[in-house]
Length: 111
Image (cartoon, rainbow, N blue to C red):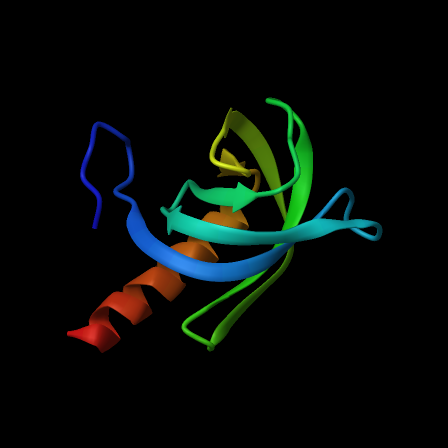
């Protein structure tokens, strides 16, 4: 777990996902999720995203919890070594509750 001054602690993560421009359409590309919390996540992507932009994300947690076309808002983007490190916030409380459940299950199962 990563501890800092955030509202929700982040859990280190390394899993792939797919990023979409809109809920029904064009795939922007693959992403690597670097960490996740109840309120958002940090991804690494080849696509530059702008702060305030809405995108949609598909990913899985622990091979058991599937998240499809989850709306996320870009909080910030920083260029990295050949990629962009981007902070995303979840839009919906429903998604935050599902993430909380999936992370609690994953953490408890690993103990």
